[in-house]
Amino acid sequence: MRPELFTRAQLLSAGVSSSMISRQYTRVLPQLYSAEEPTTFVRCCAVTLWQPEALLSHRTAAWLYGWMKEPRIVEATLPRHMKARTPRWLTVYRRALPGREATEVQGLAVVNRERTLVDCVAVMEPNESGTLVDERLTNDMDSTCWRHSFAVLRSCAATNER
Image (tube, rainbow, N blue to C red; front, side, top):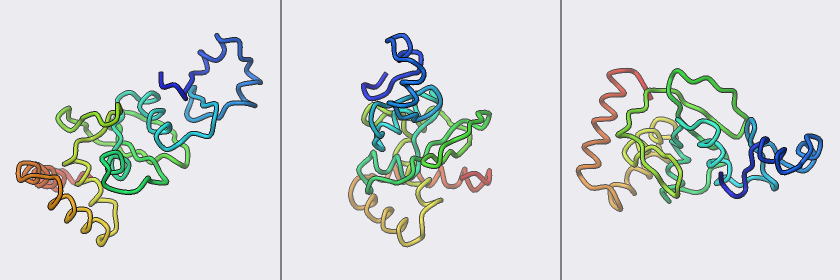
């Protein structure tokens, strides 16, 4: 468990009453609480604890890679079969999640760089996504990464998936 996050069961077993939990802790996601207002990073941790099959994706993954500023909304991708209601600060996408698209950044489950770029292009304004693609092309993605990104794009187009 992340230091700033507690499960309801942990708090109860530590002697914190239900009424104290609701008064002194912030509910981040079902059964997950924080003693303080959660940061974006703590919310990312909470998402991966709440839905262990989730991968942080889109602009959230880009932020974790250091490609863009901290997002207002956390974005994550879940397998298609998973259903979950989400708070306003969380946007969930559903699609098949091949293992080859998963990696770890800062200790969190995240889609790989290629998938992150494709996801960002799908949801960002054209000017923003064009700038992001140009920056990645010139700074940190080699031709192998680009070939894989284009293969992901072709696959998405073929299955009408974003």
